[in-house]
Image 1 (tube, rainbow, N blue to C red):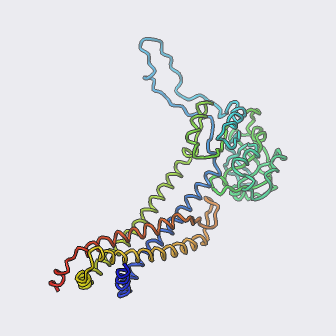
Image 2: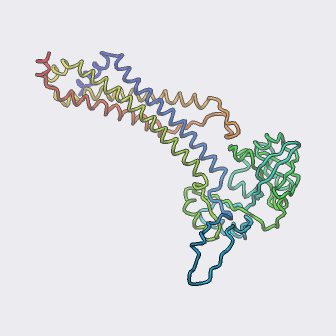
Length: 415
C-alpha cells in the first residue's frame, strides 16, 4: 500500500493544474453548500423563534363560525319540520368562566403558564394621526411568564402598568407611526364608539412587524372599561407548554373538556411552517446539485487521467500489480481531491457565512433585525465534508474500476 500511495501521489503532482481544477470544483460546491444552509436555516430558526416567543402554544377562544346545513338535509317527511333562520346568532366572543378554566389548565403537568385576557380592535388617536390596531387586556405578570415581556421592553418598566390603571404598553412600531413616546397620552376608540385616554408607560418590541405595529397591552379592567363590559368578560386564554411539540396533541383535549376552540401553534402558523419547508427543499436541492456537478467534474478528470495513463497501467500490471491495486491508486487520488477540496470548502463556507452575518440588513416594518441571521451549527459542516468525500468517492470509483479491468496485453498491442 505504501507503493500504491506513492504512485497515486505522483499522478496527482504530475499534473498540478488538473488536480487543482478538480479540487476547486469540490471546494466551491462545499463552500456554497455551507453558506446557503447556514443562511437559510438561520432565517428559519429566527422566524420560528419569533413566532414561538410571540404566540401561545395553545390559544383557546370562542369560535363564532358555524357550519350551515342545507334545509334539504333537515327535512323529515314523516314529521314536523322546524326551519330556523340561516344566519348565525349574534354571539359575543366571551369565554365563560375563563378564570376558572385558567386555574384548571394551570394544574396540567405539561402546562408552564396560562394567561386569561381579552382582546379588542381599536383606533389609536394621537393628534391628527389615527391608526387601526389591537389592545390586549392582560395580567402583565402572567403575560410575562408566557412571552418574557420584561426582556422585550425598550422603554419604561413592565411593572409601571400595574400601578397605572390608565396606562398602556405599546409596540415600538405603533409608537413610531403615531410619533408618540413614553409619557404621551393617546385616545383609544372602539368600533362601538367608546373612547378612553391612556398614558404610554412603556414600549415593547417582539421583533415581528405584524405585532409591533398594531398591538398594545393594558390592564384587564382598563380594556373592560373601554369595551363597557363587566369584570367577568374575557375572550382568550393563552397557554405555554414545557414542550411546544406536544401542543397538537393537547389542544384537542382542552377543546373537548371546555367546549371552546383550542388552536395549537402549528395550525395557527401553518403558512410560516410551509415557507420553512419550501426554503429547506430549495436550499438542499441547489446545494446537492452543486456537489453532484463537482462530482461529474472529478469523474471526467479521472477518466481523462486513466486514458493518459494507459502505458503506466500496462506497466504496473506487467510488474505484478493486481486490478485491485490499480483501482486503489485512482481511488486514493479521488478521495484525496475530495478530502482536501472539502476541507478548503468548509473554510470558504465559514468565511462566507461570517461575512453574511456581518453585513447590515434592514428588516423594515416586517422584522426588527439589523443583520441577517446565520446558523453556525457544527452538523452542517460535518454533513458538508461527508457529502463532499462521498461524492468524489463515487465519481472516482467508476473510472478506477474501468482501470482495474484493463488488459495490459491489449494496451501494449494498441500502442
